[in-house]
Image (tube, rainbow, N blue to C red; front, side, top):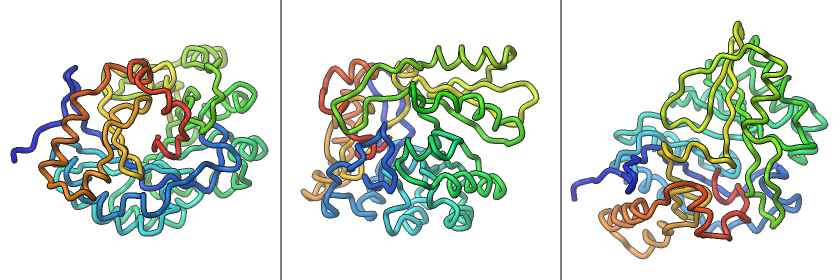
Length: 330
């Protein structure tokens, strides 16, 4: 079978796979799940690392060149490092990156460097220990914060993802921007999204326009940076600062027209949009004995039905908005 590229009906090629390796996490961030947690998947329902490797191979044969490893918290799943070593050898795969809460990154720095994995996104929603605890419900600020600079010392490309919410951490915005003054890292401010594992969600007050307006009040001169066409982040730099900051309109969804992402959950659910329903469960397809060609056809069918944008996708499913981000894979 001739491998076909993942191109939707709007002409957007999907070259970026976000692969969730687990739905479990050692934190309990309020915007991701309730304090008591959620109903995590049974181990037998998770894709095995071998199944994930085989699917990654198929996706790369269809034009995927970048895989981001997500969770939950990826490093809570035993066997992650050998899995990363395996997929790093897949033909056509140009980049592996990881999104983590930062609680396990320090002890894995050398292993990641040996594999050539240099791009790490850390979820860090406050630079204040007490606010960090209120957000994550865990007292781990010092180790996570120290890990940021350890990664920088070892030459990693570090991005800090900060989900903003009224009454939670907006006082951290300027300190985060100031962090880019002497450190070559990027801070990205994200609008809050409804994937918190509950039925309660309010439209964010701090949308991308409000965040920029607030920063601009403190920094009258801001330079806008050139970004990749598929970037979800609008990126900026304060003149003279080493690093940069970005704003991601994750709820406003202004970037859908150039989105190149496809998502695979830890239980095999394939989503062509974070806001939309699962198009197919590839775990079930594989375990039913499907050939590689049949799996490719399932993926192509999913991509062919891809919604125009996140609002259209959300209208197709009320269930997704109530699921935990740890399940969806971010």
